[in-house]
Length: 118
Image (tube, rainbow, N blue to C red; front, side, top):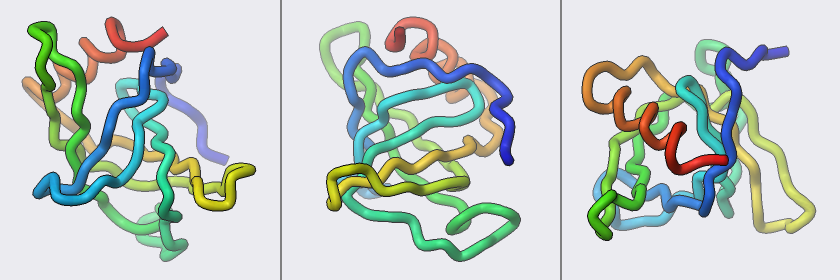
C-alpha cells in the first residue's frame, strides 16, 4: 500500500480542474498536499499500469482563486495512483501523485496548501 509523504489538506472550496486547452472540465480538486491531490470526477481513470500507476502522466490546469479576486492557474503533471467509485454512480475519487515541480509552481502549491485548505 502507498504511504502518504505529506499530510493532505481539504480545500476550503472545490477548485476546478480543466484540460490543457481549458476546453473540457476534468473534475473538482477536493484535497491537496505538497506531493499529491484528490479530485472528484465523472470519469474513472483506466487501470493500465504504467510505472505502478493507473494510467500514466496526466496534464491539466487547476484554477485557484487569486488574491485579487480573479483566478490563478497552475499547470499540473501528476500520476494517478488510485481510483474508486463513490456512492453516486457518476462520480469517482481519483488520487494523484504530483510530478516533481520546481520554482514558481512549487511555491504556488505550498501557498495553496497553507491558505486555501483547512
